Amino acid sequence: MLFLTLRQHGSSRWRMAMRHCRYTTASCPASSAAPLQPDRPIGYVSLVDQQVAYDKGLDIQTFLVNRRHQINREGDNNTGDPEDIIVFLQHPHTYTAGRRIRGKTELEQEQRLRRLGADYFETMRGGQITYHGPGQLVAYPILDIRDYQINVRCYVSRLEKTIIDCCKQFGVEANTTENTGVWVGQDQKIAALGVHLQRYVSSHGVALNCNVDLDWYKHIVPCGLADKKVTSLSEQLDRVITPSDTLPVLRQSFEHLFQVPLQPINPDGPLASEIKSIIAGGK
Image (cartoon, one colour):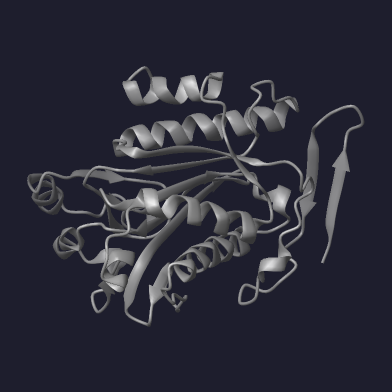
């Protein structure tokens, strides 16, 4: 099991040839993350105080993925913000279809969902159809996973463990099953997960149900699992837990599982300005 790393002297560029993950898919323990630069933080953008349209969320991810690739090519990050970024947000009512059913949704079903007052999008993430909406905390990590010496399967496992740890802090015992995502017991899904990687840079991510209106799931078969249910932190605890309540806990869980500090991006810097421009319609 071999990892080859090369650092160019006088440059921030790192290159790594990763044969495979150091652990099996079943294990991928928390201690397996070994950042090449453990003192280098991941930046985060918090947009949870607003509802960001799903297409704007896609545009933000595209911008950040392209930025990460540019940093990889040029070996220079002159923005003053970290190379890797996580975006935390909420979406308005939206149904999204993953790669497994792209182009297979009947027009009648799409129109039916739109008549409910929801948007509908086909995406490049893995998985089938799911729902995003107010009361759901969405996290989009834009990371070069080579820097953490894990492959895509271990990356997905680490995201699942991050959600499980976050739920545990609230007193909710969550777990994984043979199905993707994070569950309470064997049949109540509390968080959806779908990722996309382009030249080792991740996009899309996780969606944790906080105080989302679960009735919106009744109009679809979430993730194609007809015999399963959905739940939320609020339902499990019988009290309201909002995305704003959940965000600091999720950040701490991410820091613990990925063994790297998270810091907010500069609110007055060029990166924040570009994201604001995208949301406002400038991109």
